[in-house]
Image (cartoon, rainbow, N blue to C red):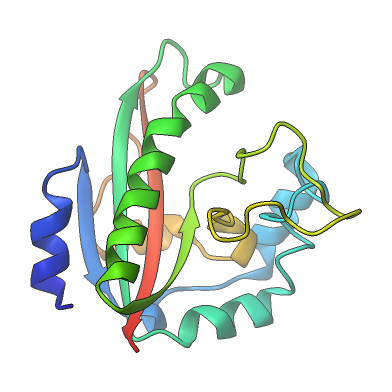
Length: 179
């Protein structure tokens, strides 16, 4: 499957912006992980977050195993971007779209690895650390859990990162290679 074929498929979705790049263009930084630990209530409680996803170096290696990267965003309107409860309710549509695109790429014979904007919320309560993930084939780790500096990639690709206090951007990364 070529980039052009992927592009043709994704145009049917409400993607705000997208770009193809190489995983080597990503910046990985331990400080991103430090923010997760200090500020995110899901740190240490989900298979899609640290420490369950592994060390940043291992995450970097997993990403760099792929030759290409599709990076895309969707936009949603919210009353108050600082209201986490409200913003998290808007995530489901982005995740559904990400899953459909990921599945299409898999069915076309690509090997893929998918990261998304926030930790997984498929289950009401994650099994971490007591049992294995119930849905490893559907679970998308958080982009930041891998230490990826999203803002730098957005700038490098001339994409938007902030659209004001009433518009929220969700991001996904699908790493891919031919098998």
